Image (cartoon, rainbow, N blue to C red; front, side):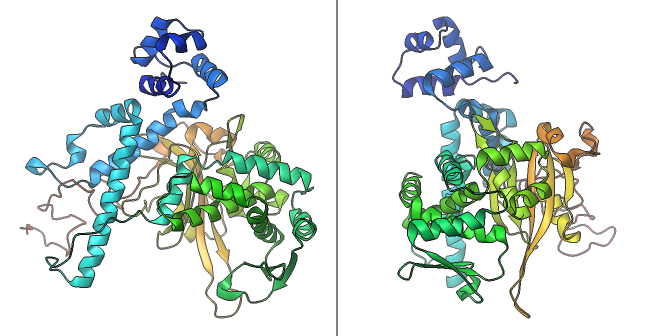
Length: 487
């Protein structure tokens, strides 16, 4: 563990408990002077002290992890890059140094999170203004002031899961107990789930060729029938039945978690409830302890785990990104799903990696290379502008439309982890993990990426001036003849 100074967080913990320095020092069996030095960032927070805090207060040590700090740093850099230019044409990203950003994220994380929330509201207001401008024309003088408007529901729900590091302990524990009590077997969970629905709830499971809207599951409560789309594989059937059981057996817990998430609208709470039900379903079909043991034994080989538990590549990746139980942590993964146009339909992170919300993602990322090699697992060692390196694994997944002429779906699914965890993965074999030059230089997206010389750059970063006298500029709207300057 590197030297970590967490004085503000330690002081906040003490204030939350209503304790004086003397009382806290006695509870942790530390001298008052040593505790004062910790709170003043004169001494680093050590592992033994963290373990004492966990033992005395039951506080998750992740609260003092630098993963949260890294997420805040990335978010703050995006915010500053997106702010308009100030005096002298300087962007906020030019005025505020990285050292100052690190100090804010480490010393005042609550302030940093408030700034991120304010910036999110700011961007939403701009998006609404642009929409109104499109409706009313370029002249916006007659447009009334924008009303107060809550953030988009799906973004709120994503942020909720992100804040929980994609691990919902209450549902994970309940799902593991249910899996044991109901006798779910790896790869054959659907058999036990059919019986549970029938015996406990009087619900019959029937296959239907054409469900409305290409749905995979329709529940008819009055008739006591759960309709599943015909043609689903066993793992898919199990997941759909497990999701319905989540609503039937964990409904109160789902509602409690959704209500306690601090969401701003009924729509966001309803969406969170669906996301939590899906989480329970994944944890039921892939119970925590057996799945983690299998993952470690297989060195996180996604295909082997899929065969063992009877589920697909995407389901395994999604579940691997949730294994963050404090007493038995797996590798902290990031999970993402994109389409060919770069639209991100799923993204979860169990650690510090932060997905950009400004512009698109990086075209050098192997999540896009996977489309050129359909069905093949593509590994990549990538390095971000801040120097952090990651191991990524990506592959395409396809879904048939169900008949001739019916459009299907194709996505690229990627799973990534910090390079320090890479030796635990089978995909690191044969890769040069120690050589910085062997890593592909990627970024969060062109609008926030600092790599000025990147050959794939689509446009300059926000807040940075563009040299319009450079004839070879790839951002010029038309080719420039030699000897001609743009003016």
